[in-house]
Length: 552
Ligand code: G6Q
Image 1 (cartoon, rainbow, N blue to C red):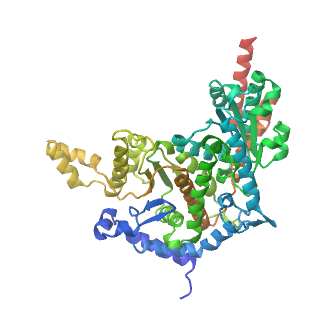
Image 2 (image 1 turned 180 degrees about the vertical axis):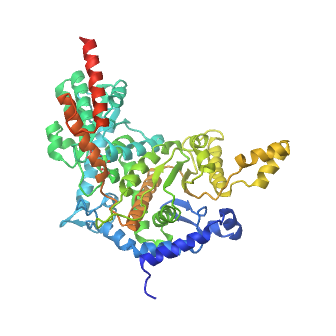
Image 3 (image 1 turned 90 degrees about the vertical axis):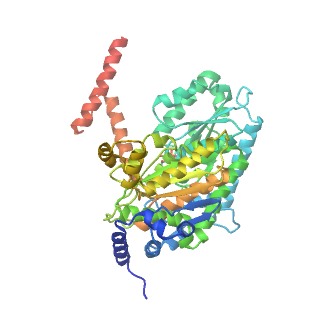
């Protein structure tokens, strides 16, 4: 039989979705004792339970057919080969090369990129060893004990998330992160730092980012005011693809760590952008992170798509967005160290797949990337889980659970695990009227009052989730986890036919901020600025005027 067209597959999926209307997950579990074994999978040290999803034996074959019709395998292979799949920026997409441990060359524009990658990794490792051992000191001979990564977006979120996750294993200088152009971010940190013992990393792919350059200049001025201009070179280094700009900032070439335009910002923690991670955790642990990601890359590249973790997660997400009209995805790590993971995934997913234009430039007629949000459990349980359980809409959730804690303390971890499992169980099962009535009767609530309370105490259940289990957070498991999500985003972007690797949507605001900054210099909004923006700008300028008058 010839393969069905995309339209035919979509129709079949829509019909299948209608057939599942009113089918409760509780009943699917009751009807199939093999459900957990069937709908779970292990890869690169991670275990995925996807049994609590609105799927039957018929669902995944249809979704896989959709994936094949979108050319998923061919596009995946093209990415790994270094083809220029980022068409709007005319670039290869090769964050996977950064963790490539294979021996085959990887040619981009006629040259093998792997030796370049390994050279920079060695340069980073040499620098990190020298700082960590104290062989390389600050200008006054003091050992460096604090590292400040100045960067934003992709030059911040990955390193900060990883350093938080690996906190129990950090044995180098303390890592700090400054991203916001709000002076409070840098100012609050500087109060706690000793300039003689501080190293600043200016992390910026382009080295033109307004926020990062403002923070870097202020940090530089703070240091120079305390240790003198001549000390700057010993307390600054840079990570960038723009070597001219780093030089004009005054950072010597031996302290600049390069990367390449085929590494997207939000995919860059594996590159020199991860220098803060390597300084804090050491080159061996950084290597462990790369090894974990590489294991997931190999799984993604080689496992059949029907048993492929990023593929399955991506397809299940597409199932909800496009066939159940659900446009949110919660990320709920049951690990305090992963508290920045939701924010990290928010960028990874929403900047990659928050798109409304197909690769060929036509407007899409279907929905794409969902809203990603979350908080670590159990905090979320005492906050927004009310909405997850009883809100009018529902949100599929990813529960992420390490089996062991780096901080074993009494019953804490058992309580955490119990809470995690209970939440996905509660979302799936719900609580029906008979259960609520029985509970209220057992509490001695009179029957009339029980009937009044009943609707408020019902839980509809049938709310889907995945549970991702790790043995514990290690560089390896964390690397695999991050790569899993990178590839999940790739799978979804491919099914939606969009370019997951550009981010034109962040440009307009930047442009307008530039105009407004110019208007501020001129003391008035430009003619033609809309009344709201002009009014707000005048209010700001007026408040400046008042402050100046008072000061006089
Ligand atoms: C990520 C985006 C964006 C970028 C920042 C910082 O994919 O491109 O978040 O990382 O805007 O850019 P620079 O590293 O160039 O300063």
